[in-house]
Image: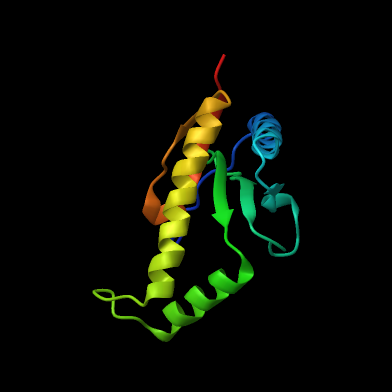
Length: 140
C-alpha cells in the first residue's frame, strides 16, 4: 500500500463549522458597528468588490475564523502586478512598501477593534495566514 503524496488536514465537524459561522457573523456585525465595511468573503463567489474587512471561516479542524483587510483595487492590483514582475527584496518599490504597511496597520487596527468588542483575537502564523487576524471566541 502506498502512502498519500501529501498530508490532508482533517475537516472540522459540522457543529464546529456552525459555531464558526455564527462567530464570523458576529465579527462582521461588530466591524460594521465600528464603521468598517465587512463581508463574509467565504460566502461570496466573486472577489471582493471594494475595500474592507474580509471574514472567512476555515473549515479545517485546526482552522477558525480569520479576518483580513482588502485594500482598494488600485493599490492592490498595482502592488501585486509589481510584485509578480519580480522585485528586489532589499529595496522594494514604494507602492509595495505602502501596500504592506496598510496591511499591517489594518491588522493591528482589527486586533484592537475586535478585542475591544469582546472577542479573543490573536495573530496567526504569518507564513500561513499573512496579515490576517484569528478570532477564536467571544469573551464571556
